[in-house]
Image (cartoon, rainbow, N blue to C red):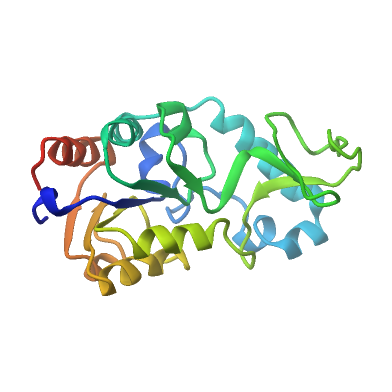
Length: 238
C-alpha cells in the first residue's frame, strides 16, 4: 500500500467474512446462512408474497441468533480506526448484523438493511425490533399489521447508494474486507474508486472473485489481518 500520509478519506466495505469468526455464517459458504433454504425461498419479495410464514420464521431465527453473537477483533479494530482517524471515513457494510455498532463504530451505513429493525410497508417507518414477527404484531406507529424484516432482498435496491457513491468518488483509499466480490452493486464499488485514482486494498480470508481489481490483496483470518492493517494505518505506515 502507498504512503498513508497521502490518504485523507477512507471508504471500507465489509461483508460476511468479517462476522464469520463471530459465528455468523457467511452467505456464500457451503451449508451457510440459508442451510435448508434456497435463496429464492427466503430472500426475495416473491418468496415473501408466496410464503410469508416461511420467510418470517427464517428471519425470526436469524434475528434471535444474531443477538447471541459478539463482535470480534476485526470489528473492534475498525471501531478503533473510526474513533481515531481524523479524515473522512465511512464503513459501508453488506452485513445485516449489528456487530459493527456494538464494537463502537459510528460512521457506518448498512446498505442491505438490519436484522434488528422492522419495516412497516403501510406507513414506511423503520423501527428497532428484537422480537418475533411471525405473529404479525402491529406497527408501533400506525397500528397496521404490515411489518417485514428491514433487510434488502434480491431484486430490491440497496440503501444509501447516493451517499455510498459520493463517498467512494471522494475517497483516497478503498478497502474491501470479507466480501465475495460477487454481489452487485457492492462488488462494483472498487472499480469506481480505482478509476478515480484511489488506492485499493482487499483484506479477505482467501482471494475473492474481485481480487484482480485491487492494487493489493492480503489474505488471512479477519481477526488477524484487519487489526494488523489498522495498526499500520494509525502508525502512519502503509
